[in-house]
Length: 113
Image 1 (cartoon, helix red, strand yellow):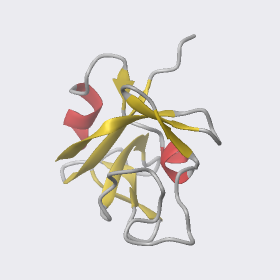
Image 2 (cartoon, rainbow, N blue to C red):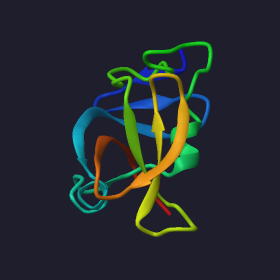
Image 3 (tube, rainbow, N blue to C red):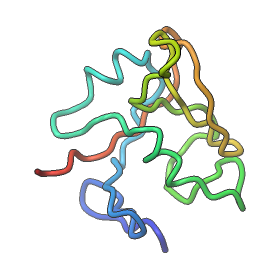
């Protein structure tokens, strides 16, 4: 199994990324950036894309408790800073959208330096 359940997270055995067990629900991008618990952060678009499983849909991942909907990344769209990248886990598509909209949030554990 790709995602190993630990005490407070799921470990992605392929990438080493630690994903929160908690799905933080739907929120604005700004809130997702600033209001996650200490030591947790919004994943980059690359981190979100790394958990897509294109052989699945509804959701297109093996990570538990993912809603088949859009999830924010921390990555701002370069051509327009009012947008950020997100992944829709119904089929694993990514796109940019207004930061003023609400989408789901799943956090990753900060890496120690």
